[in-house]
Length: 122
Image 1 (tube, rainbow, N blue to C red):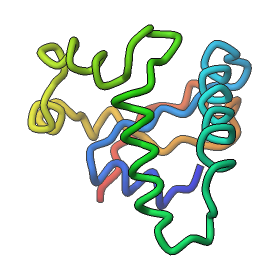
Image 2: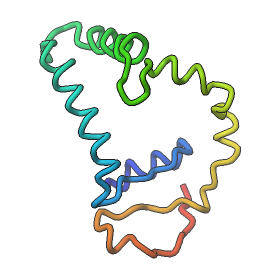
Image 3: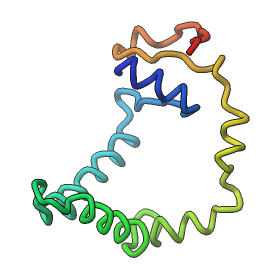
Image 4: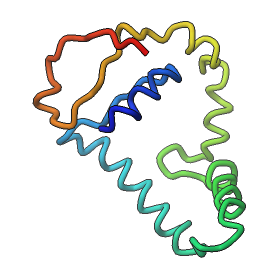
């Protein structure tokens, strides 16, 4: 829960919403994604290779545009295309971002619950 990272996200008008503890429905998705990374990327590349960035880009393209995902029964690219009209643009997100509604999140979730919202001046 690095504060510098959270401040940077605020500067970029990105909402930070950490996964709450004891949320297996969310943790399962993260863990499944990490397992896929381990099985389909890390096992196939040399992390010390000079062309690691190229390998990552190729894998990302394959993963997002060509590989069907079981939970949506299509590629993420196809899913995004079907929702594109409903997806807000960057400009729309920037206009509706409410800095006054954002706050620094704390690592201790119990401490963080119920904290009043406060304005962070950047």
